[in-house]
Image 1: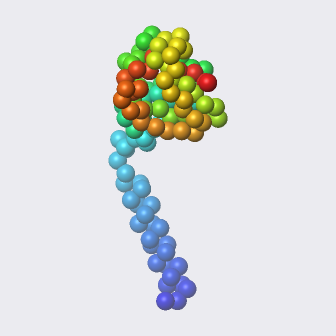
Image 2 (image 1 turned 120 degrees about the horizontal axis):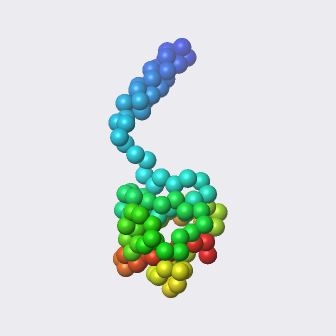
Image 3 (image 1 turned 180 degrees about the vertical axis):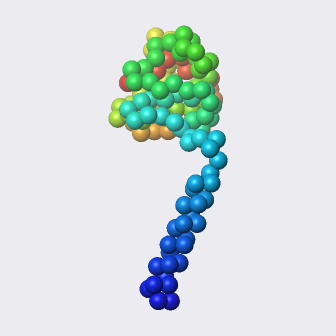
Length: 120
């Protein structure tokens, strides 16, 4: 294969790949949406469903809309600090530390107990 033929084949392959990306459905959503510098809690597993993007923590998830109190199933720490999850409002009864950069699905029983969260 000549270098000209090889270059043409690579260009064609790149165009096919670009077409596949452009053809992706508009409704497809990126998993784990969470802005840089935020700590995110999600109602569903794998960063799905209603979620909050927190910067300063939440002392009582029950006062926020979205039904996340005692129903946080996944978290993403997109900050440079460790965050703590608490069983009770007011940052009482710590149940788990989430390290900086960590993205996890919570397991039972933790996933049905989170009522507050903040930087550790």
